[in-house]
Length: 212
Image 1 (cartoon, rainbow, N blue to C red):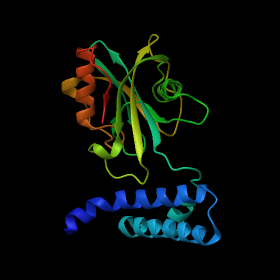
Image 2 (image 1 turned 60 degrees about the vertical axis):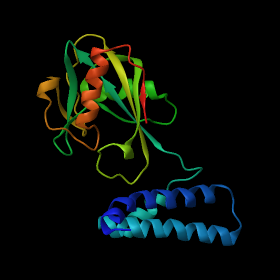
Image 3 (image 1 turned 180 degrees about the vertical axis):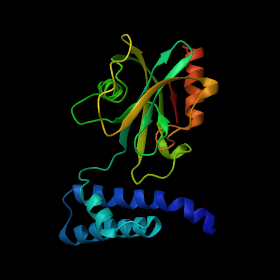
Image 4 (image 1 turned 120 degrees about the horizontal axis):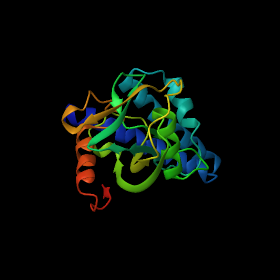
């Protein structure tokens, strides 16, 4: 295997090793198997720390905090069109623009989470009306992330103009953008190709839901 291939595969290896360990520990293994699963989890943390320059203890504790059968995490994004413009919010962390959204919390549906996140990050009160896309984050041009993530894009209809943006630590501005005037994106959250595809859904509302 070439060095280039290894450099792009390490994250998949880490995710798989961590998932094997987490799932194995979830099923009350024999004491010696528990020790082996814990060692596999530590190896995953060591690999991640070596490739990212992060603290091993931090990553080990992050992995150890995940319990139960390992499954992908769920990120939701709200897609709001006003005429032929799309609503984007400016991320405080990196200054890039993205669709409002975030993690689904325990106890809420994906659509409920999307509506909540859209309001918190943009001030728009909406209702989710169609699931436009379900993407495996690792199959798109996002930067690496330690977790395996599914991204759900919901078409949301706004109930009037947005309310003033409440103070929060995630977003600092909201704006409307035409397809040919998209600002620099926060590509950890949304990619240019995904934005282009969402405009296709806007032009052709009968398109079925996209999925990988």
